[in-house]
Length: 542
Image (cartoon, rainbow, N blue to C red):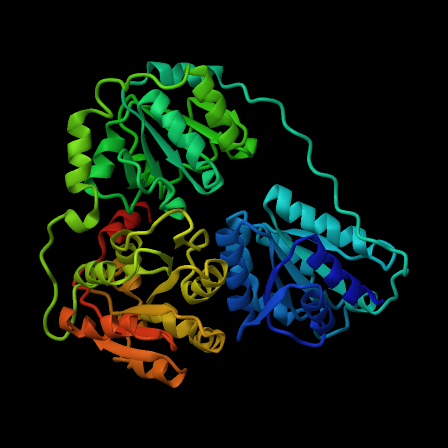
């Protein structure tokens, strides 16, 4: 058996069940071996889409996913999706063929590329070490939640592996000592209005964090990427940060203690620090000690797993106690029930003249679409509307590939999320810029037979730039003639509807009531007379 074949079989045996990619000569054999070993392979139309599909699949499934690419250009094509995954600490393997001879036109310094975007790198160095090398890469991805580029040199791929060689899974990491939570427990004991904010690193800790919140009378919130984690809790504020509703922002600002669990507490989640009230104490819990205090000074830091720390704190606090005066009061509960959601905030409708208000559009879609959904959102001026006006059932109902803030990732995100959660209706929310940038993957959606709803918030512009630079400067570089994106979708095999008012959404109802045999594209001609609320907030820091 040759190295390429052995490596693919070994990774499938270790637990890689889903792979994405664009196959060329350099990754042909390893990809076929993955499939032979039991993994499913999805051929994307571009390596950038493949990388983001794998990223989203890993986030929504909890598994290590893989993307396979050709040497050199295949890896550079995937680089934006790879960067997003690396910044998000997604457990992902990038199986990259490698041309190690400098005179090859495919030669680039692939380990340096990986390092430049924050990914780890492992090279399959020889036939003798091949199985150990891929096992080490898999363990790094799984146990340390890293994106790992596995470089597969072309000359090594063709070498024979000893018939008696067997993959030896890397040893599991040792159990860390119990975290020291005494200082943080004291802080929470004294708190009268505590708020716990969970981020990406705490998506596995819902039960432990809710128990802790009960024990200290806290309200709970999430960063945008962990949205849905506390769905159903009467004390949830939904999302903290630029997406936060006015009521949520007000209650967070009035907190006297804020504790971030697996959450960077960065400028987005804390609105450049404006959500931290005068005199509030701030604590941070993170499995990575170097992450504590990276974005802002904290009064207390605890290095440890969010679930383990939350459980230890609940024990230290003596279990449940009466909620302190202030938070978890009847008044706060009444306010949350009446006005937490953005859809409950009054607004002047911008619709008319053949354009629909994006809030009106999204509220109507929220009412139409089934509750069991997985929502993927691209980047742009529009993104706050689907992120906050579309409800989600839990943390596996919202896939937010925005660590790198690149437009064009949303459609591929929806594909990966849909495959990870086939029990839910996939909804892709895109701007017109991101939709057209990623249009090749409409073919992937259609080819896979995904019953996906793609909503394009079409303002014929890169809306964020239009509103950022709306000071009298020419905007010709960021505005475009009207594009019939519904016709583009039809050309790829979608059912499609153009929406200019709420009355046009009857076609969505008809599609939902039908067999959903073809995906649906909604080309929503949205009004955008001013920047979205979250964009205005974000630009304060630019």
